[in-house]
Image (cartoon, rainbow, N blue to C red):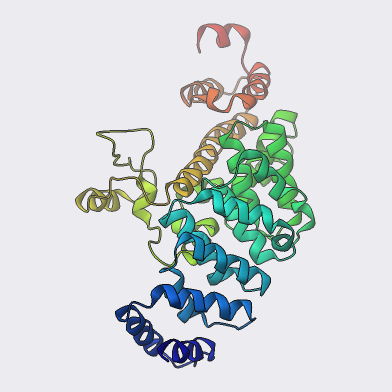
Length: 368
């Protein structure tokens, strides 16, 4: 009788003015009666029968489910065409973050790849999962994103995350630049646009397409991308939208993967103006690796080359504006050398051509 009453509540439309207290009370009663497992089984049955379960009732039950029950829920929801958020997203979150079960998620994505591909919300969830977690190998990630150009409603940040994941495994610069350029052309811009734009800027500098470079550099706003609060990034906002338990905060992005001490890390200040936040992180014992560390690492790995591109192209553009014999040529060349240009090695030949046209061989050899 208790379960029957609960099912009726699950299927009842949520009132706009409801604070969810009745749903919480019913769930608490089921937990007290040790009926959690039976509630999950009943939930699967209701969804398989095409019942539309209200979200505030679904979430706590899903968090009580075992791995096997979560997989049953996923099958039922895909068949019943449930929304990605919060329904399918909760299952993915539980399996990956809480239970560490990557293989079942990969199996689900492979099984339902065609079904997910028909709906942008599910495709986006899959794209997010494959680029920010340990789910899927490189080949499957590429398969998932194959044909993304035909998906005009794809969020731009999903392609930025894809390119970022390619960079993490050392993909060819030209391949990433091609994808980034197409994304800029085809998709609605969002906060990830500067990351993608940097590829086109570097390619233009390499190719000697200097006439449009200053304007494109200004429009890309690489500096704004570097200094923004990471919580405003669309990929991070999506993550915090689909995660209903531990959400990311600014402290998580201070974690430094390169400075290890006793197994844990307290990050260096990576974003201007966050010194106080870092001190709070230390005081709160937040030096441990963030729970969603792969996403944090991807974000940092995307931010770092934008920072370097912004720094080096700023010098590059200043040199472009100088004529041979200008007294600023030599100081600008010295500034370039000190900026570690080898970290963006593809740009070095283009720089050398600029410098050769403005500084004599003798000065380049004996003054730099």
